Amino acid sequence: MRLEPYLCFYGKCDEALEFYKTALGGSYEVNRFGESPAGAGVDESWKDKVIHSTFTGDGFSFMASDGHPGSAPSPTGETEISLSLGMDAVADGERNFNALANGGKITMPFGAVPWGGTFGTVNDKYGVSWMITAAHG
Image: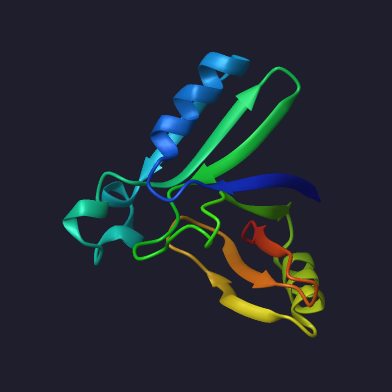
């Protein structure tokens, strides 16, 4: 199991990634809505937004996106931070997802996703946002 922070920049992901590259060094990879099957139904204004990115620096990494179409920052304007758990086995991912969902709120059911593997999101009973990813198998 791997735990990584996931940052949501609500339309400013490209800008934020460049800032962190300049400030901290490192590099990043970006996937855009328009390049993804999940982006087929999004508004044209979202086609170039970041659906997922991975930033890697010296001794650290994080993932980030622009959120999803229609998403907006919190009322205070703060960036949303989620914790992302990555696992190799789908059964482990499903078990952890269900355990975190107990008493919480499922925001995206755990299941197959167009970019491969299985994925789901849940806010646990303490309000922590979790993203669970598991490879096929």
